Length: 345
Image (cartoon, rainbow, N blue to C red; front, side, top):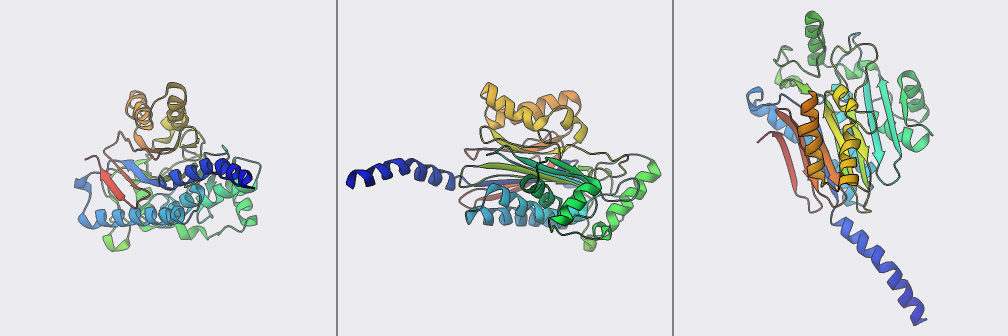
């Protein structure tokens, strides 16, 4: 009997130790877009509003992790906060297409299993990240688009809203300005031409690549990544960016890292940014910081791509490089240490 108990203890101790190690490493990192985000484009009120929204998102995800929830659950909770805010180009704050519609994309990936789900060009799903999660969990597919994705979401009981829900005056005015100039804008023009007031809760802070994202490490040692976006102002022809493309704007692998990107999607797709960072870690032994810097600060720059990523490895190491003037970003660690940043310095 004693031998049996001893054997059980010896067999289970490594598992207990591993679980405890990861419980002390739980980490959640978010971004709310990158671009020409500078202090000169910011008022104290705007900065406070963004900081508070990012903080709320971090705390929502952290609460899930702290209670023993999975990295996937934490990501969904954190991104919901940003999708429900008009401050970010995702969900409620999504920009308008050339036809005057709001078309949204999202993706999520599980680093433990390699399973992933994505939706693209959806117009009535309140929280696209939840639809992406359901595609991963409840279908044999990876990506669903348009009406098909919406039909799937309805059958899954996901909240559906009238397209008017996504209307915000500032985004509509941004489209009118873009139509007038016949140009494609990534979220905002460099100048505030919308006439939006602070009390409208819609802020135009400069040219920004509008995407939100989250990466997380849970107490079970599993990484995950999620990304959600409203795309490009005045986009046409059903254009889809990198956010829902697994390996480009969203990627997770327990052996390496979890990645969520924000930037000029076409460059991130062609560069397969998420997977490239992971591959540098797996095949060259790079740290997450070195790999992320290599891709964002060197390869993307050489190809003319602007933006950034948030990256997290299984040890809780974080990288948040960006080659634009700013990036809304933040993290929270196992001990509750929280930090939110907007500018380069």
